[in-house]
Structures are given as C-alpha cells and as structure tokens.
Image 1 (cartoon, rainbow, N blue to C red):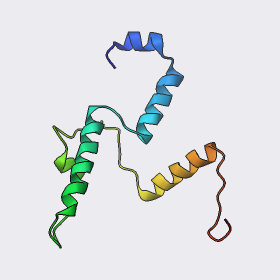
Image 2: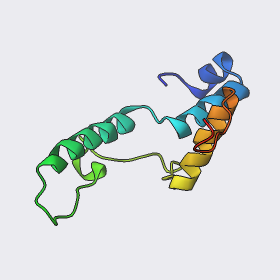
Image 3: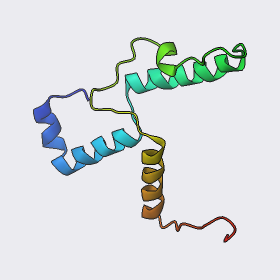
Image 4: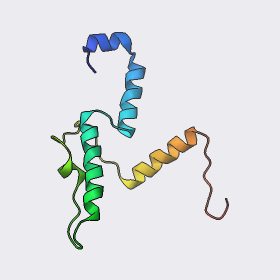
Length: 102
C-alpha cells in the first residue's frame, strides 16, 4: 500500500482493514489480479480460434508476468459464488422469486 504497517494502522482501524480484506476476497485487486484479468481476456479471444477438440487454455497460463496470487486467496466453488451473490443481493433488499412467480 506504499506505507509501513505503523503508518497504515495510524490511518485505518482494524475494522476498516478487515472490510478491505473482505472486499479483496470478493473482488481481488492489484497487479496479480490485473495480470489474471488480462489472461482471461486473452483466453476468451484465443478460444474463438481454438481447434475443435483441443483443450482450452487457462487464464493463468496466458497472464502477463508471473501469476502469483496471495497464498490466502482460494478459488470459490459455484455454490460458494451463488451463496455470496445471494447474500449481497439480500443486503441490497432483493427478494428471492421462483420462476413463474415474477
């Protein structure tokens, strides 16, 4: 963040730091995340020209520079992503509606 831990703690309290960590888990940022996003874009474009039956490339393989995510970042399962999306939607007042009941 461009400052020492002492300077950081003088500016932010532990609650705000925890909020930034939670945000980072939902929407990673920083150079490694930018490299991964670049890899995702390249993967999508190259996928258009992929030969039938060939294995798709991974964004990590096509990222610029070294792909090194922080050690505590883990890949979420589809169920975990859906659960998080539902929690966020609920925070904003969304209500669950079954298909056909719209």
